[in-house]
Image (cartoon, rainbow over all chains, first blue to last red; front, side, top):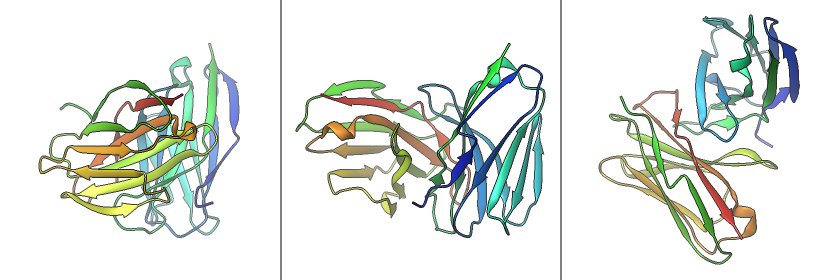
Length: 112
Length: 112
């Protein structure tokens, strides 16, 4: 499969704790993006990290990228109940245009 | 600025029928791509259109087709519907050369 894999598949934490989810992919990439999806809704773009970047921050989000290991991680700090959602990584895998390959997703539940 | 708009949001079709889904991209976005999301296969790329031309195509049968109009609005069509076509169909748009794609809320298709 050309899709990436997220790990863990499901994660349940208490409000205020940090949540870390990982993504692995298979081929060279130009960039990697993380998206959030609330149940039955569209995907919301969270952050994009380019292949020449190692770490990026946006608010409570921190993304790292290790191209040698073909992996990325998303850290959500001080989680809130509203962070409950599925999180997906997406890679372009070097293909031109806007064709993206999505991982299998991590389902995050934040317990109030 | 209005987001990506997809219509209809929900529809039920009978096996063997055809369906047309519509997508209006964010104003100024010229790239429109379509994805299918199912519990079993996850998010899969269908095709991407840019300036009325199909730029990329995923691994789907010829029953799945699309087009883009001069105002960047896009439609996708699925002919001879099968039960397995039941899914959330997501449209996404992006700027010329932009790597971030912005999703609509999706169209839920149920085939009975």
